[in-house]
Image 1 (cartoon, rainbow, N blue to C red):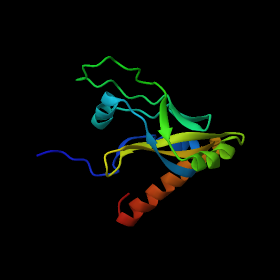
Image 2: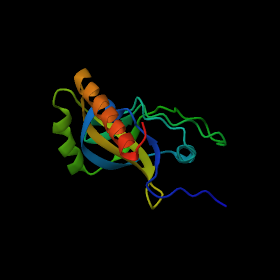
Image 3: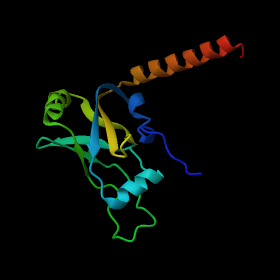
Image 4: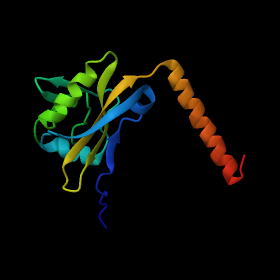
Amino acid sequence: MSKKKEPNSAVCRNKKASFRFELSHKTECGIVLEGSEVKSLREGGASLEEAFVRIERDELWLVKFHIPPYRYSQSTRYDPTRRRKLLAHKREIRKLRPLIQLQGNTLLPLRVYFNDRGLAKVTIAVGRGKTIGDKRQDIKARDHKREMDRAARGRR
């Protein structure tokens, strides 16, 4: 029996992005990978924790995205945190540029996945940093929702 992942299931997620940033303007991009990086990504273990997206000369670049080396690769080792080019239309990049030039905004990768055709995709979003008060409100709302769900199920 082979374990086939369903299409669009995330290979890795940036779980802390929604806690640290207010997210808006989500976009899907392709990602340029080298041979063994694809196999390593399918195995899992990649990390988006410190990753961010930068616009340089009308191109999107994914910086500090860590893909561990594929253990069965015979080829020379690659840099696990090298910059990787993201594939997006020029008009999408032109829409994103003024949004990130505002004070406190940045482009963040949210998740990496393989689509139906087996191509690696990255979902990116414009993020604005939250204040400590905003984070506390989110925690309070999450705890309140959890208590309401428990009460609805009849447990304490």
